[in-house]
Each structure stands twice: as C-alpha cells, then as structure tokens.
Image (cartoon, rainbow, N blue to C red; front, side, top):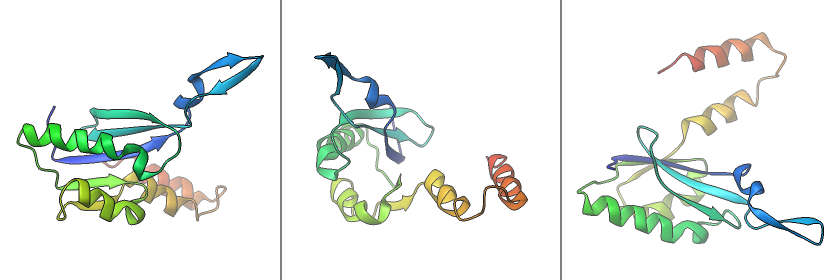
Length: 133
C-alpha cells in the first residue's frame, strides 16, 4: 500500500481488552494502541503500547518509512495530535521537509471544547463541520 501523507494517533479503548485474569483480577498488558494511516484512511501499521512516548513507536515508524521508500513513496505531510512535541522527532524519521501538522480531529476538538455544550452555536458549528468533505 502506498502513501504520500500519513496520520497517526494513540487510542486507548482497544487496549483495555488485552490482558489476562490473575487471582481474580484483570491484568491489562497495554494501555494504548498506536495506529498509522495513509491519506485515504488505510491502516499502514499499528502497535500495542505501554505509554505514549515516541520511543515506544520509533521502530514502527522506521519500518513504515522503509516500506514506503522501497515502494518509491515520499511522505509530504504527517498529521498527529501532538505535532508540536513530535515535529522534530517525526522529521528525523521521515525527512526534514515533511510537514508535520495537527490532525483535523484534534484541531476541531480544541476549538469546540471552548464553546459551551448547551450553546446553539456549538451545535450549528459542529453540524457545519460534519458536512465538509
């Protein structure tokens, strides 16, 4: 599968189901799932993680980069929720000219979280955003 743009994020609900019972207690093995998708939403790779540090998924990102390079792909954009913290790290894996930006979900979430939930403005704004392609 090819890609010219990637997006990635940690999700936390899936990982809570992976573990085992020990002495009547559920022991959770992981606390998050890191997913990397291409520009059309196809999952390029994933990894169960303990913690959300860059170090935990560095190897996965290098594998994705190597696979895409072997297919002749160059990543122009990388969208992620913590773009400011990981920009330099992501550019060290991919290329320095890779544009690292905040993903649309987190951008919208940051904006709408500042509008009171009971406000008609929030409902109208969210409805308008949901109609964009």
